[in-house]
Image (tube, rainbow, N blue to C red; front, top):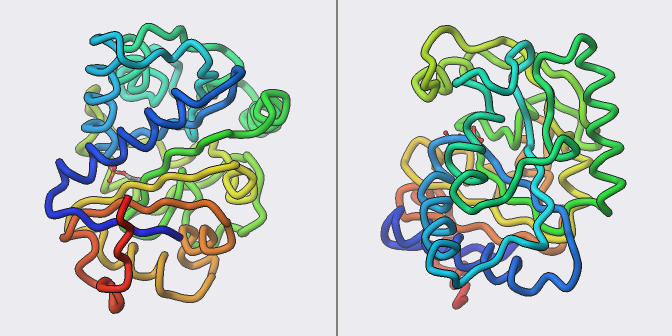
Length: 252
Ligand code: PGA
């Protein structure tokens, strides 16, 4: 893992946007890129949208994919991740959301929807880049602690801590669904490159376990230690519990 620690969350988001923009600019052919939801990536999406508006970045070769979606929510539900990505990213950068890259939370058979989604990712050649956040409990996408490190896209039950953490984030208010369709850890590990952004003190424990802890299903993000091309971008608060932070002098 290449770990970069920035003084502020703003600086970390700016660096993450640069890394993603550089990947997008280097695409020679259409390629799948996975985009997360959550509070953390919003600052990155603001920057990507600004660059697109300035004409400095074209998303023409990006095949956008989402990572997860609440089971039961239709794509036009304001609390759905479909709606989140449209609002914060797709509508602002002028790319149409494609059915292939979207999970239907309201699919009658969520297990079948997960299988379809896994096949769509494979058909697109896998993720050229997977942009991730991390949950306070170490989850990546909605792979909660205990998820198989080889898991594929599937229906997962959410933990109470995740439901509580996400409750405040729902524009539509209401209760958070207790299941989600999520890409698997095995799916994520097949991405050619991974960029993970974590900011804020609430992430410090999960970040330390991801980078310096053992590889364990109890911290799904620790599986990223097995991947050869991971960039982790942190602010100082999220890096606070790293024991070897002085060694992570990622100059770029
Ligand atoms: P957050 O979510 O950015 O809202 O903290 C991250 C996650 O749960 O993956």
